[in-house]
Length: 293
Ligand SMILES: Nc1ncnc2c1ncn2[C@@H]1O[C@H](COP(=O)(O)OP(=O)(O)OP(=O)(O)O)[C@@H](O)[C@H]1O
Image 1 (tube, helix red, strand yellow):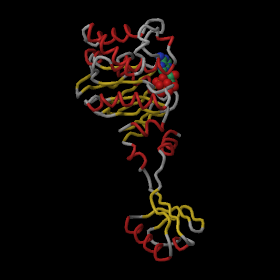
Image 2 (cartoon, rainbow, N blue to C red):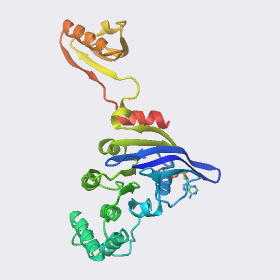
Image 3 (spheres, rainbow, N blue to C red):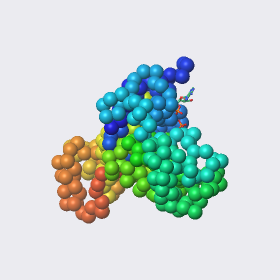
Image 4 (cartoon, rainbow, N blue to C red):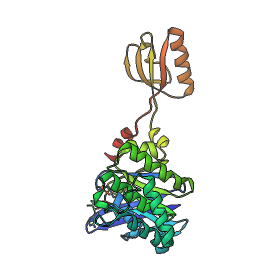
């Protein structure tokens, strides 16, 4: 478990991170979202020791994170770690060795990863010869080689087509299943919503929301949509019901509690057919816009 505790980072007059705290739990995906300049990369660099915090600390399983801990993490930096002008297999194998694998195993695992990404026949190619999507796959392979204890991935899915995203996600799931905490940043909210167990939203250096997708979606009042056979005007003024929008047989309402909802449904059924009745699932993007405004 990785704890980012009250981390502040200043660059001259600019406070890029202001008292940022959140936890990346074991065995799950934590999606780190926020607009340009929100501070995601700075946070990840501080986790990986590339930058020092102005104040605050990062803990690993309750203890201050050490250089040795970091050496066991897999990291995909924003600027990407692999060399464009060198062949891909030896680069990956070298990273495996840096993580403590012996040379033979590192080469074997590197080859396995590349084969898995349909790059088994490209092992001697320089990175720059691959398509951008394939380069990205190799960069991800570089982060996961060597049995990392945690994965810190800066925009790992950018530039990948949906099929490649799913492929990478399947690969990363093997790590979360083994208990590895995974933190990844992304601009693609739909993707984060679909893939993550937990989301941390950063805005202008502040954590403005953190929780599961369900928790964040359900912040505030839940609205219900009702579509009936006849006019729903009778909902107005009914105790326990707040009408948000009403147009003949269609209404969007809030209920004070479940009893109010059940009794309104019973009344609607008593008056004729009810075609649909249920909570409106808010897209996370609504919530995101609210908190990052
Ligand atoms: N080395 C630096 N020197 C000065 N300012 C910096 C430095 N690194 C980052 N910043 C500033 O800190 C703020 C946060 O930047 P950061 O790159 O962490 O944001 P981000 O959320 O990763 O953005 P993006 O999604 O655009 O990559 C920005 O205003 C950026 O200009």
